[in-house]
Image 1: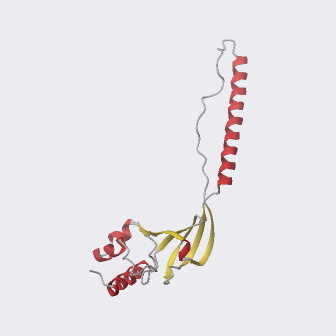
Image 2: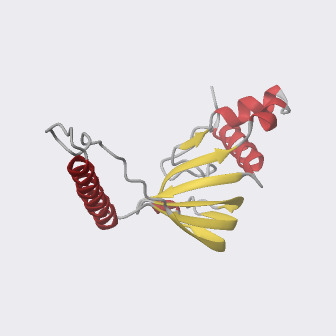
Length: 173
């Protein structure tokens, strides 16, 4: 059975293991902050250093990009039809039929916008997800006890998350 003191000790050890690791923190407004974990507090606020903020494309920008892509495909098909029509007119043995190629479904790709922020505090009440950035080479060199420690965050001692600091469902991967 875990005592509150043991849970608090495990929580502190878990947070110490995360110090100076790169974290991806997703917030309620769909922003993602990527930076080096420096500290936290009892309200689950997180301080990140050398932080970049990434924003997902808005619905408006997605619809504008899709409309622009559809217009580009339409113009491309018209040009192909004109070229096919000119080629058919110059040939004496032209066969009647559709001049355009079959309609292809194309994907519109939008990148996330980013900016450098430096040192930031992410309020704990706005955090949705936390991910630790680790490479396979970092995991291989770690002691087995450290692997277990980072594999699962400790349970909270109370509803407020006292002694945890990351009691908002950390995703380790």
